[in-house]
Length: 532
Image 1 (cartoon, rainbow, N blue to C red):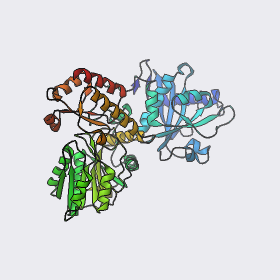
Image 2 (cartoon, helix red, strand yellow):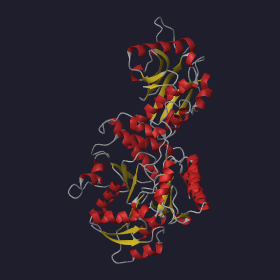
Image 3 (spheres, rainbow, N blue to C red):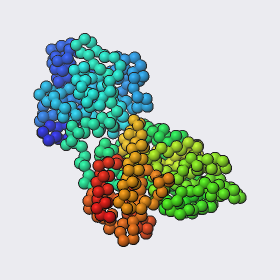
């Protein structure tokens, strides 16, 4: 239930007296005002899909002043009016329909309509739908367009009761109507995260953690996790992905387990803290490998890696970090693919700080890891392992939790899972459907690097190997990274400076992962310029 500042209440209808008023408002609107149905003696109009509708109502005390219904079962009402309905709609969407949007004349203002639709959109997103259809009355086309509805197809309905078929993408719609119903929107945080994780999240993503959890065995959850896996594969070009409850450390342990099954010797490339952590994963898993390491802040030299392949025996696999978070260096994926392809070696990648921040093409990569809580812009807690081959279970050789084949054999859900974390990840992934944000992230990062240099700060990663979304600053000895980080925190800017490898080197980091506000970034730069 949500109460607005003007005393109105928004909620899902559950009471008999609410349904009675719904039927009466339905009659007054679609019989008396819009002549869509014939008059009757009861003064009530029960919708033909009433049993399948979820009604969102706006109440002034116990008086119904507005309503809207959500329904997700095909055929939709527009299926009965438009042949080949799906041909008009964006491909690959999970559809629902909005029905019976009605507001009493004395409450017909944008705020009430936006509040009803925002409640409906949040509920629909939580249920796994991302595109909603509506038959919008021709009398309110300007309002619908203002709220983000897209018209399609011809008008439907009889003369005097004409409607325009329309659709909206729910995540964009949820954000758009938020400014009309600000009292319901989550409060703007007092501080802003420029951490590499947890990252700043959009309100619609944060909201998913407050929804009621559902069983990991329910059809709704299995449908959702299937959709999320398909979205992740479309984003990366990988054939398969498994979603584990845990961090990137767990994902990399799962990769180490798969490498151990090969009983072959490999090569690990390291040029920073997270390359060194791959070495630790490999040692703990008992892997046989060579190490090729370069200084922190440098990129891998293709000629050096090529020489490693010419050793005898040649490595059967290579494991490397794509974006080295510690330094902000981006290692060239195309070069690594070409080197491994030329020597029939399997390539494994840590993409934890690259996925979601730049295009990542995992086609042909044997195994790769990422997480929900960095560039993808959701809560931390989900570990992602991508692959391009069928992984069989290994019950006699791997712990259950690290056995990727066990996940694959159970449609990705062999154990208890978090419906809330998966819902938040799906909601975060919607932004990649309507145009990727990579160009904006790259432009903001380039702008940030230029302005940091302008105030005299030294950046660890050279421009030619700099990753988007993460900038590591090497502070002069007289400027304490810890003290600077604490001062910035007091001014509302959360930066990364507490990790051991940063403390040792007196480095501080600015992350542009997740929801990055240019205004907030400009405020951070003003604080930095003053403090250093």
